[in-house]
Length: 167
Image (tube, one colour):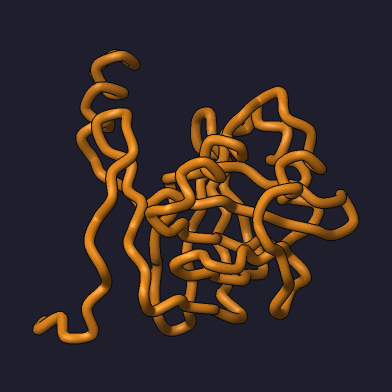
């Protein structure tokens, strides 16, 4: 088995979308920046989100049992940094950007490339993280967007989404 530093260096070469994951409910409003998000299946529509168990948001996501994955547009890097700041109060995180709700009541970011509003259906504790399996209840897409990707320990812009992908 490889050591932690080698693994982290290897994972720095795995490009990922930058997301602000938000929630609101009995435990209150919360949100953090995450790149460990991926689709699981389209029938039923499911995705997974991995959140560090030591994060102050972890328990709130569990208690609220819902979340929204806001996939950031390339121009929203400052918001990614804001939601990753460990010492910033929740109300200060949400003081920037325009927020509304879809189905679950979780905060949805206007201008995100896509927002996926979800119910958390079950969780698994794996090492240092909780894996949240989420049923997607609603989606809001901005069709004229560029992606914000995290790769090589830095942010990168990826070109406009094309309607003619040719796949």
